[in-house]
Length: 314
Image: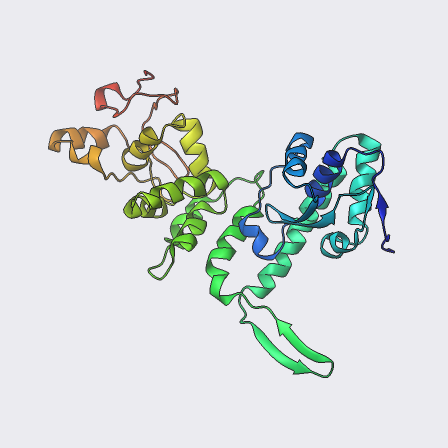
């Protein structure tokens, strides 16, 4: 397909143009670490344009763009080079026909591009960077050995089919992700899987010196969007309730077995500890509770005592 020198966007809302191009584009290379699958709305795009009067966008949340929308037309060359021949025109044609910045054709283009980019990236993960002379100059081959461990985890999480049931038992077989030689960003990416909410929470804990708490996520195999889900949906977005739950109520996501730690654990006597475990024998892989009848209110009262295990108060 021939590449158009310019694509006219005269008469189109530039915010809609930016959103459509973003939604059709793919994450690329290290951009998978920042990749957010959430589609962009016209309102989101308008805020970006207002904050960037030059209207040039290189990468946005890990997605490759390389477009200048400052005029009534733009060159699609770099966008099409990285997203596929004719990709920009196809995204804008879909916008013109549907009036939607994320129609089905754009969604398909994004998913296809994302998986193609992931396959290319996986090919480079095991190798080392090499430079060698060739007849026409120098050949540079990018290898990603130094980040393969971390990037591979994020890549798998970002390309996982969410419609398929997650294999939680596999988490236990894989063991813990964090190694002694991991730096703080590497730890956060391995546990947070690039999920923005999870990574923000993990970074906050690390900034507060809660190193052992961060490792507890790994030992209980709680990763990525599941962290955000537990925090918001089960614990009502309350940090202290979430930390209590992580330490006292959350079964291992790989085995379903319950273990406890932390300050609430230290307050229990021998009999109270026995009662705590006696009422929490229903954990299973992927479960957020080991209680048979857990609270349904995310603002549940804590600590939960054995005799009030079904409480929905607070």
